[in-house]
Amino acid sequence: MLDSVIRGVIGKLAECQDIHVDDLVILLSASDAGILQDLHDWADKIRKKTLGDAVLLRGIIEISNRCNQSCQYCGLRKENRKIHRYRMAEEEILDVAKKIEACGISTVVLQSGEDLLSMDRVCALVENIKKETDLFVTLSIGERCYDDYRAFREAGADRYLLKHETASKTLFEALRPGSSYDNRRRCLLWLKELGYETGAGNLIGLPGQGVSDLAEDLLYMRNLRADMIGIGPFIAHPDTPLAGFPGGTGEMTLKVVSLARLLLPKANIPATTALGILEKDGRKRALQAGANVVMLDFTPEIYRRYYDIYPGKTRVVTEMDVYLNVLRGELESIGRTIGKDRPLETTRESAS
Ligand code: SAH
Ligand code: SF4
Image (cartoon, rainbow, N blue to C red; front, side):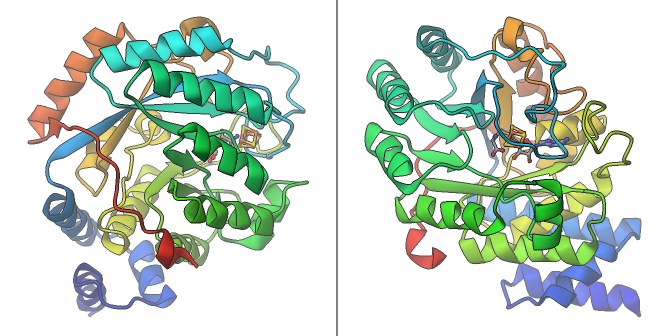
């Protein structure tokens, strides 16, 4: 009986019919292996139909780990005095961006803590990357004012990632003291309005988070018409107030990935690093459950170990060319190829 209800909801979603928070709660609560496989298969089918078999690669450079925020879940929070803080120089960032391009990757993601890099500095960086390479530039440097976002866009930035983290106001305010729920959402609307391909996303398994919160996350991202969706399990960091909390599961993360694919068939959804760390084969499983993007960390080794957002994150991998071959083999084994990037159709009109 329950099976038929759940399969009915999956069918409704796959046919893009209107969906209610209760429908999502039913699916998020499902634990039967057969049902979960059906859900992932549907999402995989939709991914194949709308985006094909090409997996898009992004090269990420973690340009600074300085942060003036106090997010309870994150190892980079300003109260964590155990990590050495760094900020990469512009020439170093440019060199790495060129390396990313030389590896055949067409997007660079510049990420940092909420470091108060000046507007001019960020603009100069983006302009130089655009001048010296053909890369698409994604910024992920946190909340800024409208004028900054506009200036970055005019300097050539194509995309912006700003995870909304959680759609629950209560959780957001408890876990991000000093940060405003409404302002983060306002930033996401500005980014859409300015014509960025805009990325939202959430954390799975935060202390106190329920399935209805995750259902609200999904509806929020659908209503925003998010172009990119970062879905990652929360992994407790020992030097934060959430040390010792259990964290998100691979199973729940994959459910949310599949549902995100069904709600937003064309979105770019990465198989996130955090899921890969949490579970053996996590990346492969996410790619078979709706994801179509892989992020590769190009942060120089001397800095990477300090970009300590969650445990396991700073692990150093082998040389990138060796690693890319391994990845190519992994993708081939599941019938996928490495794809070429192109701009998405803009969806900003529908974000209001
Ligand atoms: N400072 C910027 C970008 C860097 S943080 C910002 O906050 O937007 C990048 C992402 O790391 C955050 O969006 C958050 O979702 C994720 N993150 C932080 N702490 C984490 C943890 N303990 N486990 C998993 N992901 C975490
Ligand atoms: Fe800073 Fe981002 Fe970590 Fe929050 S999640 S502490 S803003 S780096």
